[in-house]
Amino acid sequence: MPNAAQFHHDLALLDWHLELGVDEAISEASVNRYKLEAPASKPKPTTTPEVITPAKSEPVVFDSTPLAQACENLAALRAAMGAFEHCPLKQGARNTVFCDGNPSARVMIIGEAPGREEDREGKPFIGKAGQMLDKMFAAIGLSRHEEAPESALYITNVLPWRPPQNRDPKPEEIALMKPFLLRHIELAQPDFIITMGNPSTKTLRDTSLGITKMHGQWGEVLGIPSVPLFHPAYLLRSPEQKRLAWADLLSLKARLEGKHHA
Image (tube, rainbow, N blue to C red; front, side, top):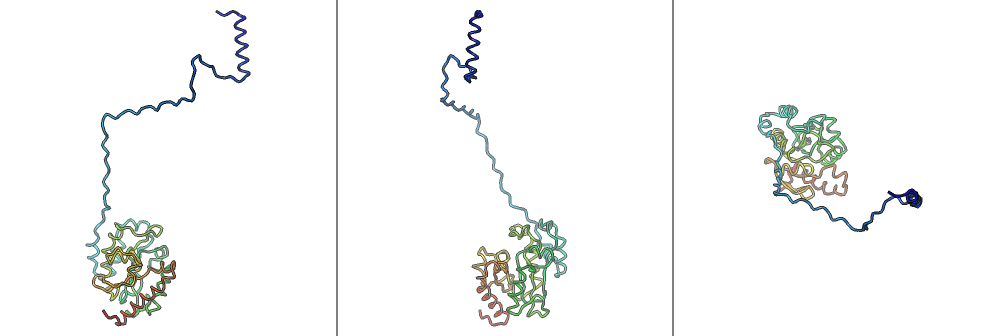
């Protein structure tokens, strides 16, 4: 057992170290503080786990063809589409946008889907794009407000409900509503069909080409002469394309006047 003198000596030495800032005891064995610790080894699995990748399933699309074909007139088709509950777009829409203009018109215009203004009012092409459309066709003597079939327009869309934030229609949405559109054409029996923009052109002309390649190229939809035109919303964003749009309108005018030669 240390004597009292040794105890007080050690205590004074400890106090002196504390005043110097020493706060950690030093062991007799040296410590290399720059030495990196070896990483811990991962245990090896006894068996190889089986990775199962879930199969991607295609969306199931309700077959609306029988319902559409059962409609014997436009009024029945409008009622059937208004009562149709298999398209999620309807849940967020204010109105079912069916048509505008004269059903007896020689020219039927088919757009993409309603926008905000169209959804609010329940009619197609009534916003800024609709005003541009009216000016385009007025330049060749056609109007949705005319009663005479030879100078009238009949307007509808691929989809009757507005997609959220005006996004592009999804393939399953188009597939779901296409039978109604085809029946709409059969019941209206126009002499000419105008597809406005990409979605309606690709839906009815069975093509992967964009509107910049397809515009003005005549073909057929259900045996009816059809031509794609630039969507008026596109022309508002790209006014330099109006020259090409005018040429396409003159092509339609020539057909209406019987001046086209195959």
